[in-house]
Image (cartoon, rainbow, N blue to C red; front, side, top):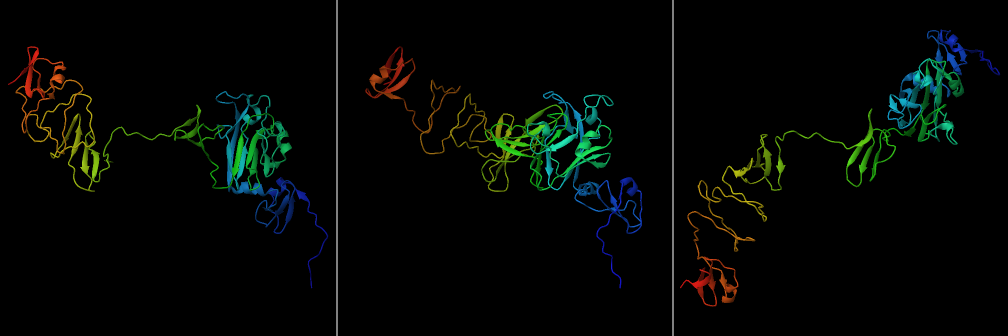
Length: 418
């Protein structure tokens, strides 16, 4: 009966990546990868074998899988608006933007561009490197007052090999591939900063949040515009009731009120005027018409064409509230009888005593005379005292209630008609 040997320990000689990557190995062979600090397991068929997952290499494996990975291209330049001086980070071509991270994602900051090594000097000139870091307490990290570097779940790589943070700084200029990556987990601080090891005020704030919490934008409600807003943020002006969008483009940074297209012509416009079945429509040629929409009784076709208001079915037009005309009113056709060639009747259809009232002189003019029908013509009545107080002109007529006489003013005095 055989049994597996029991040993106190096993020591596996470490091998470098360049040896392990080209080796197929025999099935069952195990090597220790001294570069990635993990085991390599071989099956006899797969070149480089299989890498055992450990806490130290899990982030690399996540990156290799391409799942939940966001990669930024980092370049270095100056403030396009010349508000700030000195070197500044550009993330995907955007001037030191605020960033939003989602828990569960890995973010890679690719610093391969040569501006990270030389700017503002020309490529190949004097070295002026800008290694990127993270901080949870200061926008300038260790260069700021009491600031520190945040390194949890942060990986530094030179030429695709994981290196220490210090080695990243020391060998930065000699590498062709440079990147810093961070995996955001639930324990990651909600606020981070990205900053440069060598220069202050190059980076900006990073906000971390759970997936689906809307970390890609924000909305503020206030009477004044919010400060330090990110591109696409919304602001509701509590005083005016208007909403604005924060826009960052190549030329400016500003709050813009959204607009919507205004039609150049009104066609097929339906506007309910508050009466059931009554709708104002247009034929697309400038003519508006009140029509029955099918919800109630017909009110006829009310048409506004140029300066003419008419109905094409001879139905009446009723103006219910008091109406004020600030200029002349001209009656060209009868108001109550169709197809007549003379001015017709003003008719009061309700009970009461309608009046024609004027603040000054009221003049009735008709070439063929003024006719009163349907009742007597009544003169204004005054006592003799009231009559004598009038400023009369020849032709004025009144009824003197003291004398019980109709009188006319002629040749400068009042004379009884009978």
